Length: 238
Image (cartoon, rainbow, N blue to C red; front, side):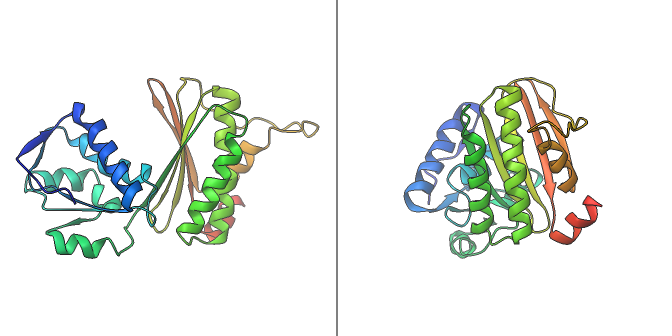
C-alpha cells in the first residue's frame, strides 16, 4: 500500500509517474492498496489513472488493486468517473484488503500491439486468454477472438498504425475496443466480392455484434464492439 506522507495534489504532470509506479508494483506483487486520504485532484479526468494502471498491470485476477481513504472531495470525482467499478474503493485499509479478494463489477485488460503482420494473431490470443481468465462463456470467447483479430487487421492494413486493444466486461456485455493512432476514416462494410480471398471480416463482425461504433480522436480513432451472451448474439444475427 502507499501510505500518505503529506497532502498533495495530483496534476497532469504527475500522471505518468503515478501510473508507472502502480503498474510496477502490480507487476512485482500482483496486489496493491492505495491510500487516497492525502490526495487532492483538481481535474476530474485524472482519476482514471487508477483503472488504466490496473489494465496495464495485467488486469484482474492476475493484478488486483483497491483504494481506500478517499476524502469527501475526492470520492465524487472517483464515482462520477466510474473508477470504483473497476478499482474497488473502501473506507479503510481492512476493508480494502477484503475487496482484493472480490471480483470487481467491471473487468478491464489492455494490450499494446505493434505495426506488424503478426499483430492480429497476438490480438486473438490476448482475447482468448482474457476470456479464459474471466471464465466467460465460450460463445463470448469465440466472438471476442474473431472481433479482436478483425479490428487489429483493419488497423494494420488500412490505418497502417500500431494500436491498443482493450477488453472490458460488465457482467452482461463484453466490449472490445481497438485504438489506432492515425486519423483515417473508420472502415465500413462494403459489398462482398464472392471471388475475393478476403473482405468478409467486417461483415462478420457487424453481424455478430450487439452494437458497435467509432470514437474519433485528434490522432486517430477507437472502434468499439459490444458483444453479449450467446442467446442475444443469435437474435442479433438474424
